[in-house]
Image (cartoon, rainbow over all chains, first blue to last red; front, side, top):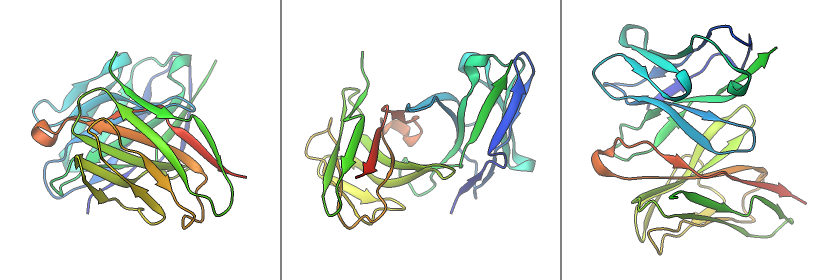
Length: 114
Length: 114
């Protein structure tokens, strides 16, 4: 079965600094990968997705992610963090069961310091 | 604007009581999903449905029940058999075209035990 690991539970970044959130997946074939963001008490919003093709994908709010098959990783990056980026970030992989279900990582909470 | 509406935003349950969480979407999506979110646990799939009058158990279906009588509605009942129901519940939907469309999320219902 597929799985997603986000090794960092919390990360604190200074405003204006760069950000990288780690995501590792376990999947037998080419994965379909997603990053979602969740503000406190809210639902999840899609940041970006990878299905195939260019391994560097651009998303909303200035985020990008790079798919590296050799490392089974799909890390999320942003060159300059804003205070409004403080939120929970979830990496997910689409199920290989034939249904459109997602397996989520446990998430990384981003804190932004002034 | 199209979207997913979950109600109520906050819900309290007494011991031994069943409660039903509402999820309505006007996105004309075929598939709908229920997730449970606990601190540090990420999102776990409870039930999902790809078509009216059909649904499948997810990873943590015990103590929960669902129905899908209309395309736009997918209510979740938390039964008295669910011994630890306190959590944040998220409903999502997606089109099924190609099976790779991202899921759209509601703003969640927070359930607590009195």
